[in-house]
Length: 502
Image (cartoon, rainbow, N blue to C red):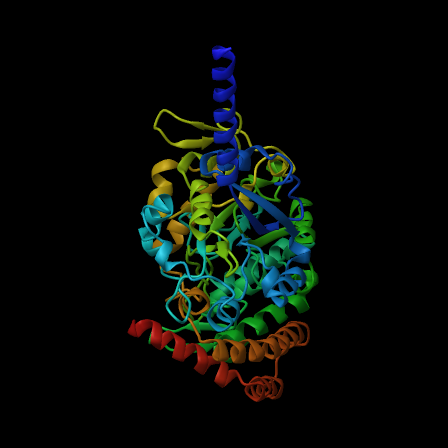
């Protein structure tokens, strides 16, 4: 009887401890960004987040929001503040509006300690990685996401070397040489000697060609000159010279006319069909360019137009958004520890590349190395990829990761561009990411940009198709001034001056 009673007491004790442990588990909710082709369901016994839950004793219920639905659902979420989730993961929202002005996002500065976020805190100051994160009030409203790759520019210039050899030509170094090369390619059967996409940010986008005329064009239409003055790209002499050149190519049938309208997929199909001999792009390996076509092309430095200095739009490796906590977060410490658990080195590498031994290994040098990349984005079926947390500044990432061949290719091009001195004075991301406006100025700049974008896009397409006259150029300048381009530049100059003062 005593043994039975003892066993019953022991059983009750075990059950009580189990109940206590269950009660201690933190329950959180997350508004989780997901790519359109992200197929794994984070709520359905997903192995990766089960491991994170075991490590942190925190269970997260995800509201998976696809890219196409994000803006609508995010606006709806903020419209009902009392029903906001604990966390917002992997997609940006307006920090100045929802953090600084409305207080719907939780400032995180007091929680950024080695006790709560040891992985993140140990890396956040490497390579000045966190400099771009604080808002205009100086507070931190999100945990950064960064996968540094040691790259400094977007589009790389490529030419069909096989065709050059056939024609007995050297790689072009000037715009005049490019024009003559394109004419000879046209005569030799190339349907579109030069082609691009209409993307403002794509490495194959037509805006890249402005660099040869000294204008580092980007989707925001501003740049910082060597006197630290913010300038409007569309007012530069090189901007006009470039569209005049593009019009010449358009008239002669040397520029693919669909460069003003086509997406990257259509552009890539033309390259792979052997119709294009000159373009800009991200890299050759592991891209939309087919393996049997890669060997025809080689990267070159951007050719320069007479009277100008090449100025390639450059990029900074600054963090995107990893995670926000909302004002409703039930347990900020538990939430941040859950996020930080994903930033432990191996968990982070597994989330981005797949399981050790299957998609990734640790090589003899002690670095993680990708050994298998599933075709057709198959990796998205069983790992979070960019939907998980990742924070790897350059110095840290170099120590733990063996760069894959396509990453090495990209790095080598960046190194060549830096050594050649063809990059713009300062990246436009100083203005976009490092300089912080208050909410009123940010709204004003955004409103002007909306109208400015329409005007510049329309003028660019018209100039390329129809040419430029003094009258049409002056009308374009007058139109941008009436929209408020001077005020647009002034707002960014003020923000940049404040940044320099700090």
